[in-house]
Amino acid sequence: MRTVFSKNAPILRFNAMANITDADEQEGMMHLFEGAIMALRNPGGHSFPTGPDSHALQYIELISLLAERTDEATRGP
Image (tube, rainbow, N blue to C red; front, top):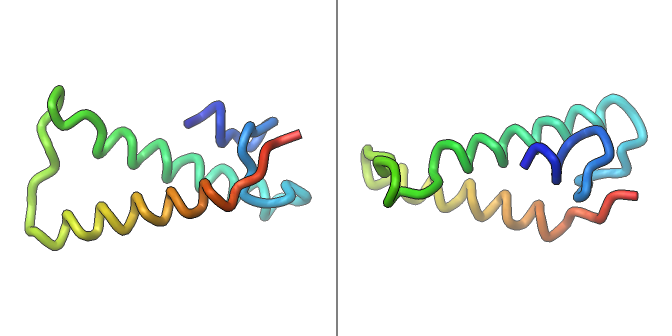
């Protein structure tokens, strides 16, 4: 996640990377992806997140948003 979405020469870009705001968005998205992987990955090797059923839907919505943003991203230079 850090390599692909890095604000320094990203492989996938979420914007034109033309200014500080673009770089901040890129870095923020990188952290969202990294956080989702760290929090939700590999439930067989780690404990699966627990809580109310509504959390499952919220996790799916988060993953759906990240997937949609990835589809919209462009290859870096």
